[in-house]
Amino acid sequence: MIIILFGPPGCGKGTQASIIAKENYYPHLSTGDMLREAVKFKTETGLIAAKIMEEGKLVSDDIVVNIIKDRIEQKDCENGFILDGFPRTIAQAKELDNMLLEKELLVNLVIEFSVNDEVLLNRIEGRFSCNDCGAGYNDHTRMPLKDGICDDCESSNFIRRKDDNKETASKRLESYNEETLPLLPYYKDKQVLFSIDGLADIKNVTNEIMSLIQK
Ligand code: AMP
Image 1 (cartoon, helix red, strand yellow):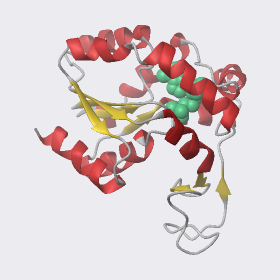
Image 2 (tube, rainbow, N blue to C red; image 1 turned 135 degrees about the vertical axis):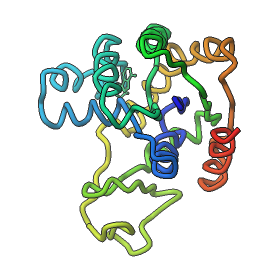
Image 3 (cartoon, helix red, strand yellow; image 1 turned 60 degrees about the vertical axis):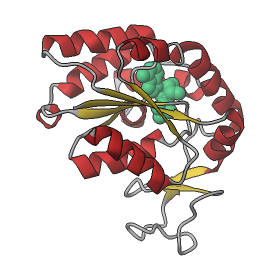
């Protein structure tokens, strides 16, 4: 099954993608994570992407399409995968369809997380994660149970994303509204689009997604 989690930055799609990936044994493909990895290791792609990401703009379609093209060739994607943060433009969506067509596959499910901008900016600003195991936290909604210690791996090494500040977050929202939102009619026409309340409790959101997957 090929699932796209769709929504603005901070809507919770990354958190849900990792929960759903574990429950369904599908790999979680986040272009944002892959690009951050490339930036960290200063690869050719990383060097190009770093400034663009810091400005809250979109990296070129060619770069992200090639990243996804290579990734879905790997064996763990054979039975399906969950896309988080891709596609973000009509051109990317069309390229994805072409890649899948070659494998006689289609996008099965696009789940849109509906949320309002004010809540998003607050959420983004509060976000941080464990640098060792990747567990996600938030100043406003989910602090570690023991102050300064990760619930999952007991590390005290936390990080915040460089682009999780109010100014860059506003720019990322702008890119989403201008370049990514037009994808909704594209998937609506294909009758694979479902909308869920992204502001509901994490467990309720997971249950809603699971029931859409099982339909
Ligand atoms: P994310 O972690 O999904 O919020 O992505 C972080 C940043 O990576 C975005 O603000 C973009 O600069 C870049 N990025 C991630 N995915 C894409 C994509 N599909 N197309 C263009 N840029 C992307």
